[in-house]
Image 1 (spheres, rainbow, N blue to C red):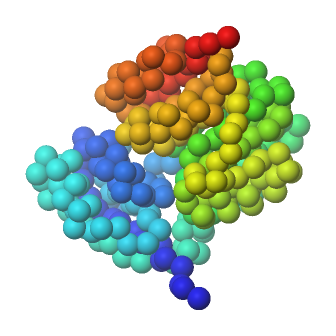
Image 2 (tube, rainbow, N blue to C red):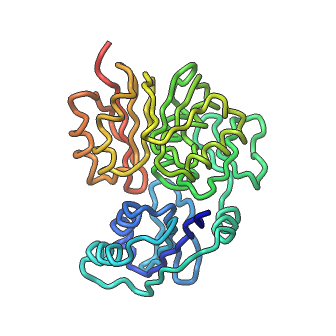
Image 3 (cartoon, one colour):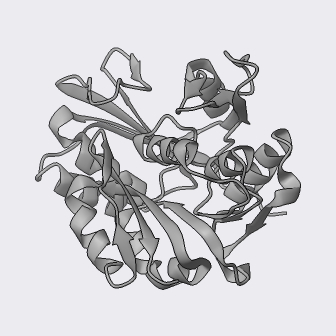
Length: 298
């Protein structure tokens, strides 16, 4: 049996001014998670809305499943640093139990509006009567701590989801599809090209009692769906590449919800869908944008 790819952690030090660009680079290279710490090791896990409490110098930690192309990644980060060489560069294997323990140590229940809470499996719900999504992301993206996921969860928490069909494209931990079902959706479909993400989504769906209504597919196995809502929290370039695939899943009059978009990328993504989607005013959080709009048609 072939051994599983190791978890690999990238660590480097950079100026706070370059954080956004370097975060985009490591995300595009396939990072499962990105964290920022001060040189003393204090984490920034959930800054207050509208604030970016970073230090003048920042330590970045990025987690990968398997070894990234280190030379290409190094050169891309150098370019993002305007030619500056990254300080204290280290790329080394990390045991899975270290990652899981670190996540559980720092993650805490979070409220996303209305009655929706996301609560780690290691914590007690602050409001037992609320809609409590119990989560263990495993190695998949999507905990609610990142602005891109938080934007989606806040939109879902205020949306009318009763009896709706939802597609979560790039489902990661399954957090958005599961939240939709707990908030009243009739059926959800999760799509991801990472087998570990599909497994994490499957486990989390069982944990929340919605596995029967959460169908999971790799992209090659996707079946025709007429969804009322299609949510995709990926990256701007991928969202543009997936234009036809996402629209094919969305019924006329349905909502397209796109996240993972930096503010400077908003116009490009909107333009890619402009002939099919009537966009609403964008929502913003910490330099990231959530785009929502309805598909034209009856």
